[in-house]
Length: 230
Image (cartoon, rainbow, N blue to C red; front, top):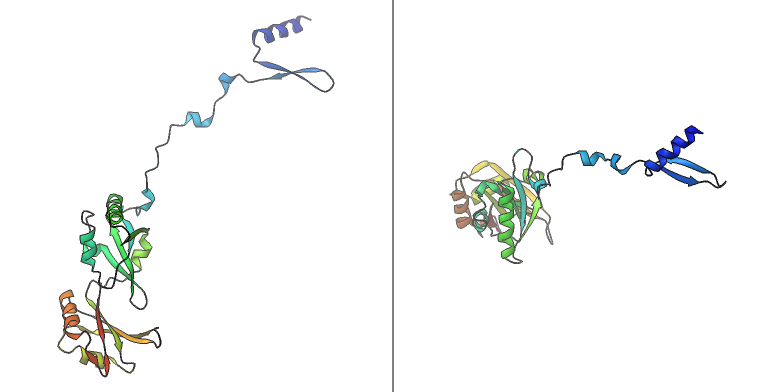
């Protein structure tokens, strides 16, 4: 009996320590209940985490470079046009590559920005231009696979199907170019495939001179279109 009296005293002095529950037989049992002051969570003991940096996933690890693809360009759009358009983004001509299709139709401009801030500045510039252009995020792999032509490569379109490298050399008579760089190939077109050739020149000036002097001239019996690849 003294033990029961002691238990009643403890319960009365600490009502939150126990709770009484009646089972189906009408018997009461005592259950231990934790006091709220003893409850703690692991999260409460951890220091608060810093908020994530907005758009940090855009940056290339180790370099901080950010890549974007600019749509809405034409065959006549130059790399200098893009650098001038995005003035204030700290771009050079080496930060711009043209994404060409297999038929050398320009699909867009890949741009390498020195920082996330430069990319965001470019996005603001493009948004002010309305629907003329569109800038989308890209990654380093899209940049790496593109060939930089740098205004030094000339594309000949519409050369005769039976043309050989010697015919291309005669067509380019008077121009300075690397004869070993001549590549002739076919590309799908309607109604028939079209024959093309690319030639590397020592400088953009020499490539532009070939465009000025040879565009719409004839190779054998076919009129040839000359373009400078960016």
